[in-house]
Amino acid sequence: MKKASFLFEGELNFFLPRIQKHRVIEHPFDWQASIKDMIESLGVPHAEIDLLVVNGQSVDFSYVVQPDDQIQVYPIAHDIQLSNKIALRPPFPGRHTFILDQHLGRLAAYLRMMGFDTLYRNDYHDEELAYVSHHENRILLTRDIGLLKRSLVIYGYYVRETNRQKQLAEITRRFNLQGNVQPFKHCMKCNGLVERVAKETVEHELPEGTSQYYDEFHRCTSCNQVYWKGAHHQRMQALMNQIITM
Ligand SMILES: [Zn+2]
Image (cartoon, rainbow, N blue to C red; front, side, top):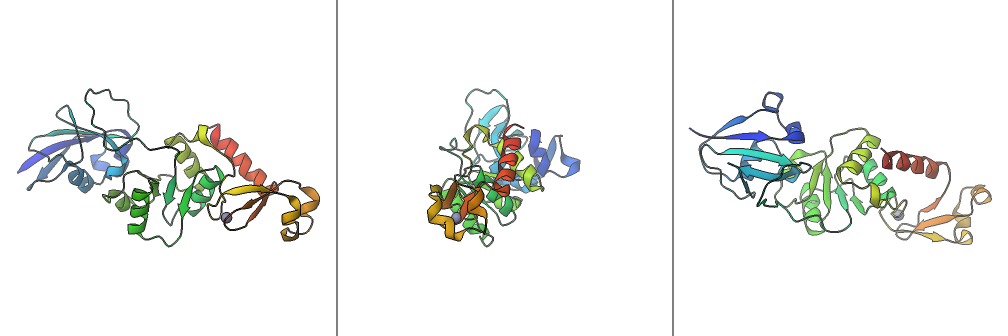
């Protein structure tokens, strides 16, 4: 039987069964397949891969695996120097924007709080997530590995952490968001833009006593949610400071 050898580098080992982690995998195959399909059949989603090297040469996802190929697969953050490196996707254009799967509602609220345009609904279907991510150039964050294997997904990442605050720290580190935070720019509830409003315009909507203690108010231009610098705001600000300085 024909076979090719695969070595997955760094954090890509996360996706492999224990017995295959950090070692050369001799992979038998009967029929021709692209390197992308073969890698995904081993468990690693293409969206997490930055560089493919076959017998010392950089290749793209359409490369058809040949018998006895020696294949190295690199994650997004790697420091290998290689001439004639073939990029697997264009660099992410502009400011980071996101779309999140249904398991990541709290993370979505946190990313909005940090000023990142973040789509989230608890009823998105997988096709919709992949489609919107593709057509709006949004990074798809998910806890579903299968979703990151969909061909439409160009920018995607499997969120490893399960604790919400640790997830925020993970995503901040992974996408180097620290320098681009714009606190409270987007509404935590709906992703709408938040703007400063005069106290008189919102006074009648506030819980009793609130207008006595606060003078600065903001309102979401989409859902009309009113924000002020109360205890919740202070907790969120403290969380952001902690994440940014980690
Ligand atoms: Zn809103």
